[in-house]
Length: 218
Image (cartoon, rainbow, N blue to C red; front, side):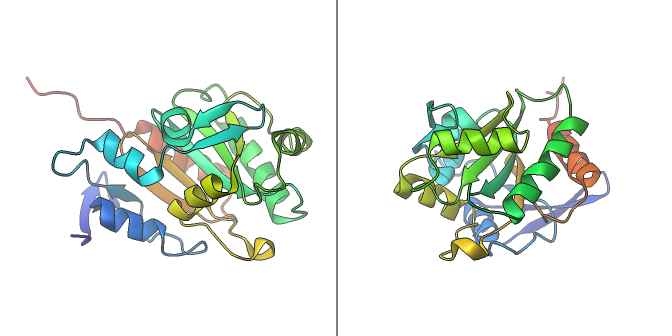
C-alpha cells in the first residue's frame, strides 16, 4: 500500500504515494531530506482528498503570535502553499539563522504572500513560547508580517503536529532545522535543507505555486 510510483513531470522526477507512504516519508527523521518531492495520492475509498489531509495533519487548535486561536489544517494549511520552519524563542543560533534566511525568501517572493503563499513557524517549546514571546521573536528577526504565522498552543497539540510533520526531537538543543514546503491542496511536499540558498528555496516555492490541477477536457 505504501509503495511509491515514480512519474516524470516536465523533466522533474516526482514520487506519488498513498497516504501511508506519504506519512512514512515525512516520518523518516528530522534531518532526512527527501530524494525527490513527494505527493500523496488523492483520497482513498470514500475519503476525499481534503478529509485525508485533515485526518493526517490534524485540525488541532493552536495559537498565533497575535493570540488568535486557529485550527491547524482548516485555518493554517488548507488552500495554501506553505513554507514551514521550526523554532523556539530561546534558540541563539539555528532558529534565528533559518528565520532570517526565510525573510530573504519572503523578499524574493514579494507580492505573493497571503493566498496561496503562507510562511508558518511552529514553536518547538510551546510550554515556554507564549504568543507574546513569539511576537517578540518574529519582530526581532523581521518576520512579523501578514502571511507569516508563528504557532504555539497546548503542548500536546503542538507536539502532535510536529510529530505528524516528522520533526519532533526529545532534545530541544538538538532540534530539527529542516524546512518543509508544500502545496497543500495538491498534496505536493518537499523537504528543504537549512543550508539551501534563498534563491533556491524561492525557486522550489514557485514550483509548488505553479502546480495546479489540469484544465478540464472538452
